[in-house]
Length: 502
Image (cartoon, rainbow, N blue to C red):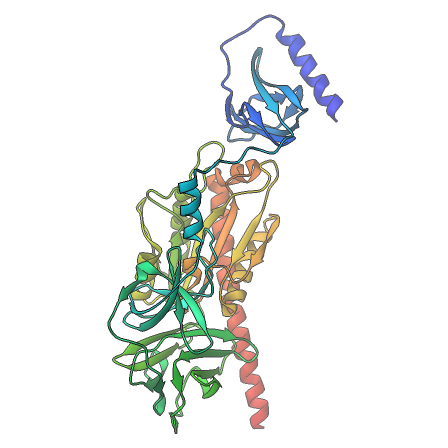
């Protein structure tokens, strides 16, 4: 195949001869460094779509976007990479001079003051004082760093007194109970003269308030909490830190829609666990908040299992000053996600869906603002749309879907399966994803990384408006699959209960 490509180039050169016309553009967008430290080196260029291109006499594909490139193998020392573009009887050549060194890339040298500052930032300092949580606060499991932030244990309401026992970088270490700790960003706290107290739980009640089943647990103080869901059977668990059981009865009304029964455990001397067993396999979200010092847990009722009449949130990733990933030819992720969201919005509205957008234009929006908008509009479900980046630029990297809470796995799976029907490579179904909009517990949610901005073949698809419509049409099918799955589960449970009664 390589010889065939070289022969084709030889024929083109022969036809061109010495006749030259206006030069065709060759814009090198990746790989023009003077010195590199890896033997395998990627070259990516842009020319006019329809041109023929070659790198080191090997013909390469020019995508409909005009992008082309290849991975070249360098020898130690000086290398010349020749890039050639042909159009009709014209030829344009650009040469890159690249020096490959097989010695390790030199590391930045820090001054003594810089090194001490860097070391001090990563040292843990013990301390003891108290803070209250601000709006948007969340607990982290540990002090780890990541572009998505530390792994979230869960959001908590404002006004909760927390005991600080240390700090590292921009985090406080929080003592939740005798044996449990978490971390919180300092910006979400305010120093207080109050202190934490161990409290007794009161006797609680469970009732149907119309839109949800509500649990009310009286407490003398607001204390921190965390929650999670379990499957088979579907259960919501809430741990209250600094609490001991004094709940001598639980009043459970008989007209509950979602909750089968509730119970509690005292797994540690100062950790009180609320156990909420659901009637159905699928949860449609729950919320935890304080009304005064009463802890309120609302478990949402299942909506009508049809898209018509449903309220669905759509999030276009990035926006404003946050461009997201940028493709070889300069397409910005923030622009693509907004295009896809508007396409999906139109399709859903034709099916009778009330659509709520996190952003409707190219504006900056924090994760806190997006989450607040969705909660205030009482959405039934959320899809956040992004495009990925990374890996090889010369192959299709594929599509993927993401969830954090286990109860949202099936939603993400349904969306991913419909993407895979288009013949896209499976980049994966990713769980425990620490993205902020996967964190809310108030509604089912999933994130879609549709394709890779950094992949030339994926970029070609993303630049095609017709293909964007195809992607979004399959997203609608994925949502309908999820509704069908929930409905089928309900019907199966009804049959089982009917047999038991007989």
